[in-house]
Image 1 (cartoon, rainbow, N blue to C red):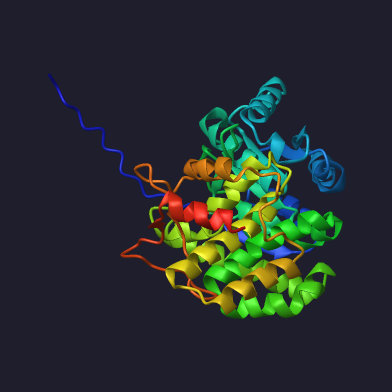
Image 2 (image 1 turned 60 degrees about the vertical axis):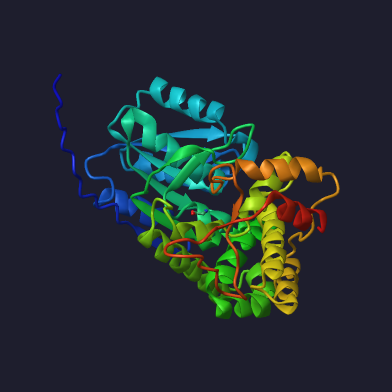
Length: 370
Ligand code: GLY
């Protein structure tokens, strides 16, 4: 018998820039013309049926005008499209149009688009580079930054995917103006999550400026766009692969993701997360980490953001309890939750340990109380 050691130690530099601003499509094309895409001349623009007309076509036309090969790959808008089937459909269309390894993927849209596009880019031809052009608050606050890519399965959201970092992220605040209000509110849930877990000042800012943000006030929107990024990338830079610290970005998602699936996507991601944030706050209160006043304040901010804080009647509570076990934080069949500490902090349960085991009975009690 022989044993061969295949030595493949790697030093990887996946650093990238996040550019936050207004009307950034010209900047994207300019970057492509300079260094962003290297020698690549072919661009697969992946987008959804709504964002295509609003923003993606403009990028497509600019690239064509400059002599690049580009194609739009479009799927129906909404979380229900974030499936293996959509991924396969786009991959087949890319192959049919002659895309091989010498291309770059440009994801133009919200979280569904950036999640699925990053996954496609990571597996197409065993990996091609991609950039995210985030057009929604939800993508700006969470999905487009940090390199988590995935599709949903009938069992639950985001169970199949890869860590794959983009070459650059563009956060175009101008695009928030065309968001349907419900989508804007949904993005606000991830913003509130960041404030709740890391920044009491941001929390107060949101309380005082929610109306301004929703009215498109430049300064207020720029502040939350920048602060969301800072909070998120500061965590991701320390724990890209979620071996510990990154789990804090899951605050509110244990119950939130389960509700999202149980609602059969009638609830938007952020709406489900908002309810999940209230659930974890109640749990935190039960464990002695949040006062009643702090829990009420979190619920009040969620309501101020036009987000729900109660579990809809149509969701079967027992089915929801069982759905909690699809959470990626589950270890050895045990539920684990990230727990907020006051406002603007989370509980650390040990060295690099930010989620704690919670019995099904306690989880059920919280869910039944909502
Ligand atoms: N959405 C949570 C994370 O990126 O880790």
